[in-house]
Structures are given as structure tokens and as C-alpha cells.
Image (cartoon, rainbow, N blue to C red; front, side, top):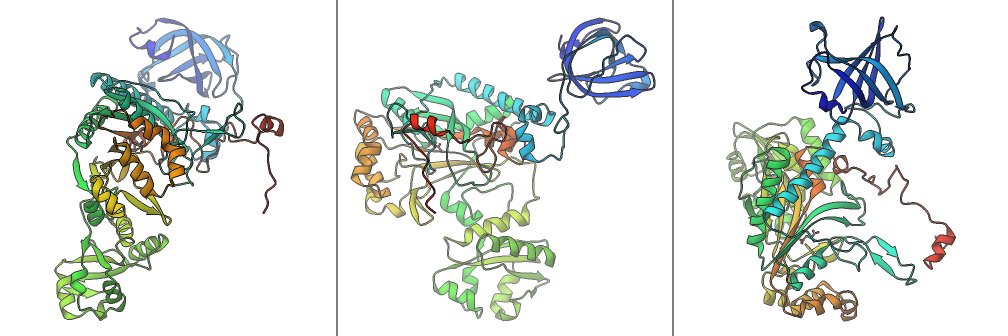
Length: 567
Ligand code: ASP
């Protein structure tokens, strides 16, 4: 009998064969108390030391007991637990399995290093906090399946030993034993396969898919993660966005009992960058960035003058709170850490402007700045491809405490087709995304826009999608403009371009990061807290020690061998 089944039992009922873990043991005079815990409940056991029960048990022993379900004495009722009014006076106790001394206590708010928790993840998952997270994850899967069935979307799986699918990361590779020297890639996403389904004539597709991306340890990413992957034939951005809103609303409601409003807000990439400094705006914060370049037209402040002459801008945020000097210094440190030369600021108090640069302001600048009203203006002067990210950080740091409990969704769309990452041109989504205007794209790919849309929740990118290219010529063109040679295109994507060439319907889709969604709703500090067996930041699994070295003989079977590091 599991503890949950005790509900409804009458005082004095006999219970036999109740299983559970010893949550703790307390000796009080002649009586011994044990809290017996199973997956979802706890009940107190009590027995007299003089009774025939003589077994010594310790925390996390798995035991089986029999006894009498009894109402506790009025003065001993514990209203904090579901069975706080009852206890079981036991007449037999059998140890099913002992436990070694624990590496940490099975309780909430432990202060144990994460690597130890991950090494003993099976014990970590016994803790309520973690258990609840994993149950919430499971409910999320269930609610996804329910709504997808309701929407009549087909659940179809795709292979995981594949040829590379580019999503902007490096591949995890799997050597083939049967074709020495050849490798499979693990999917960065099921992107090309879900498009093949559309080419095959399926009306739609979804999958709760594992994706693998070998990225340099970016904050709170996992090499292996789970996404809800979706595609609609004859789809376009409007169809996809509408369906995603229905799906997300349903998950919030069914799995988390949270009601959200749809349709979500929509803004363009350009609006997002200019108002929020980022393409992942946190709309719980109402304050937006202002371009105050015009105010400094005749400025005597040298670095601002130089910036404006080089077509740079001055972007600012105004807060009514007059921050302390210590807070201002800490904002200065934060922006410097990500590359800024430092924080510019003015304090306004009853039209009086102070701050390190105040003495260089001319009268017009002073009077225009004072129009912002009392408080603090922080600003950054520089190039438009640099300073928005500093403003984003400042906005989040200055106003972070605002509206913490709200849920705020927004779509961001009309992304530039390409972005430059570390000097290399990359599609801002992936190279299967349709350019908004293929003719413009051909002439000026760097300035062209993609039919790509992101969904952002509270400043976190929850998912991305796009309308796809369904014309093989356009697909070739995009790969060329990305910088691939003809040989590369043939070798890597020839089969896909061929597949596009037999009457491919228009199609569009999306993917939602499930780990991120659950972590965000549960307000967990990291996605690792909602993944049963995550890897560390450096991609290790402390539990199994993966990845691990392979011995020379096993490697030889794959026609591989270690080579000396030449450094
Ligand atoms: N394959 C994309 C991704 O994993 C999602 C999509 O475009 O549907 O981000």
C-alpha cells in the first residue's frame, strides 16, 4: 500500500505492507518516531522502545511496516503535512534495503555543490524541489500531447544518426564502424527531416525531440536539450504563430494552472533593438531606451562629438530613482565587463544637472536634459552595432525588480537574414529560412530580412521558427550567399535541394525549448534544475563520468587512433 492510499482510512484501521524511505528518526523518551516517505506523501510512524521492534534504521533505509492508523493526540497534530493528524502505531518493521551514509541530506534548500548533487542525481531527485520540477516537466509533456492531439497534429519521429543539420553550433559526431573514417552527426534539430515530411505530403508534424549542439560553454545551455518541434504544410508565419499561441496557452493552463492572454504582442527586430537594446526584450520592464543624439548636436563633450561625427548615437535610459554612487559604480562595472568604455550619467534634481560631465554641458543641453524630470539619466555613446547591448544590460539591471511575477510574451519578427558572429556571416536563424523578398536577397543579402520569428518570454528566447524556402533555386542561392562553395553545397545539401525539386508545398514551423519553458515558469535559476540528468557547464556528466576515454583497441574498431598533441 502506498502512503497516498491511506487517505480516507478510519482511525484504528489496520495497515499492512506499507513501503517507504526513512525520512528521519527521532527518539523521545520511551518512544521512537520515524517519518516514512514515499513519492508523494509522508506519515509518522511510532513505536514503543519496549515493543518487539528492535531494528535500527537510519535515513533513507527502505522499509516495510504494518500497524494501526491512529489519530494523533490533539497536542501532537502537525498541520504542515497531509497526514499531520494521523500516525501509524507500528507492530512490525522490516528493512527491505539499507542505505549507505548519504552524501547530502534529502531535504530542500541544501547548500551542496552542484557537482556533488549531479554525481548523486538519483538521490538529488528524491528531494521535493527536484521531484516537483521533474513532475512539472512530465505534466508539460502530457499537456503538449493533449493539445497536439486536439489540433490533429501528427507525432512523428526522425532519425538521430544523420548528416549534419546546421543550426549555428558544432555537431556531435558518431564514428561509423562499418564505414571507417565516416561519421554520423547527431541532429542539432530535426529541421531538414521535418521539411521532408512536408515534401512527402504530410499536413503537419510534431515531435518532442532531443537536439544536440556542441557550443562553447554559453551560459545556461546544455549540449543535449529537448524541444517541441513543429511544422505545418501550407504554413506561413501567421498560421504558425496562431498555433503556437494556442499550444503555449494550453500548456500554461493544463500543466501549471496559469491563465495567459493571447494574442501575444508582436514587434519587429528593429523596434526591439531600438527600444530594448536586444532581440529578447523583457517586457515586464516598461521603461524603454531613448535616442538622445539630437540633443547633443552642438556639444562640447569631445567623445560624444566624435561619436556623432562617425554616425554613432547616444542612447539613454531615465530612472526616477536617484541611484546611490555605489549603484552607479556597479552599473559602470557591469557595462565595462561586456566591452563598454564606461557609463555616462547625469543626475537631475529640480532642473539642476550634476555628474562628472555636467560642467561640459551647454545651456540648451542642460535645459533639454532637465525635461526628463528628476532622477538619473544613464547613457552610452557609440556605434549602433555595439551600444544597444550595453543599454539592454543597464535596463535590466536598473529596473530588474519591477513586476517580477508577471508573465510577458512577445513575438519578435523581421530579423535580418544574416548576422555577423565573430566576424563570420551566419544566418540569424538557419539557411532553410525563406528570405522575405528573394529578389532583394539576391542583390543585397546582407541587408535583407528573413521570414523568421522568435517567441520571447520575460526576456528569454523560448523558441524560433520561420517560413521555409520551398524553391530549390532560392535554397541554392541562400547557401551560396552564406559563402558555401558549389562543391560544399552539392556535398552537404545536394540531397536536400534534390528533395525540394519535386513539387514542395509552402511550409513553416517552429520549435519551443521545453527545458527553458519549464525552468522559466518554475522560476528556476538554471535549465539544469528541470532536466533529470543534465551535464555540467563544461559538458560533463559527474554521475557516469561521460564523456570518457576509449581504449586503443576499441578505437581501432572504428579505424581511429589517438595522436600525440603536437603542441
Ligand atoms: N530548427 C529550428 C531550431 O531548432 C526551429 C525551426 O525553425 O522550426 O531552432
